[in-house]
Length: 353
Image (spheres, one colour):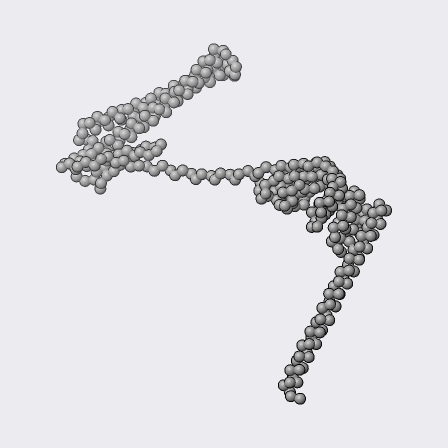
C-alpha cells in the first residue's frame, strides 16, 4: 500500500472516531445533568411534603424548617409561599412579612396569585410595626445597633412591634431616638440636618500705619538758620519759654495744694466715720457730711492729676523751645512736624546733619 494513502486513511478514521465519541458523550452528559436535577427536585418535593405534614400537625417550626430547605434546594415560588404561611402561623409575623413581600415580587407571579395572598399579607402587616426614618443621607444610621443601608432608609422598615432604638452618627456625636412601634402602625422618626460649619475666624486687622505729613518745602533762605541754643537770640522764644516754665511750676504747685486738700478731706472723713460708724441706709447729717468729704477727696485727687499733667507738659515744652529754637548759623538743623494716623497723632523731628 502506498504510505501516503495509508496515512491519509488513518487520519480520516481517527477524526471519525472522535466525532462518534463526542456524539455519544454529549447525550450522556446532558442525561447526567438531567438526572442530577431530577434528584434535587425530588428531594425538594420530599422536604415540601414533610413541611405540609408538620403544618397539619400544627408543628409550625418544623414546617418552616422543611419549607426553607425545600426552597434552598429548588427555589420555586410555591415553597416560598408555604414558608411564609408557616411563619405567620408560627407567630413569626416579621419573617412571614418579608417572605410574603419576596413572593409577591417574584418573577412569574401573576396578579391573581398576588391577590390570593392579600389577606395573609395584610395580617402580617397588622401584626408588625413599621418605621419611616428621615435622616441626612450622608450620615450612618443604625436600628437596634444594626446598620441600615441607603436603600432600606428610602423605604418603610418592618420591625417587631414594640420598643426600638434608632441612632444617627453626627460629626458632633451620636443622636438617639427611643421609638415605640405599635402593631399595624407606621411611625415617622425625624432627625434634623447637621448644623452648618462654624464661620471662619477673621484675621486680626493690620495695625494703623502712621502717615507722615512733612511741612511743605520752602526755598532755602540766603541766611539759613540752624538749630541750637538760638533761643537766647530771640525775644519771642524767651517769652514763650518763660511762660511755659511758669505754667509748669504753677501746675506742680497746684498738685501739692490739691493733694493737701484731698488728704485733709480724708482725715475729716475718717474722724466722722469713727464717730458715726456705718452709714449704710443712715440719713444722718454726719453721714451726709461724710459723703461730701468723700466726693471732695475724689475731685481734689482728679485736680491734682490734671495739674501735674499740665505742669509736666509745660516744662517739657519750655525745654524743647529753649534747646531747639533755630539760630542764624550754618550747620545741622532740625524741624518739628506732625504725624497723623487713624486714632493716633504725634510729632516728628526732621533735620540735616
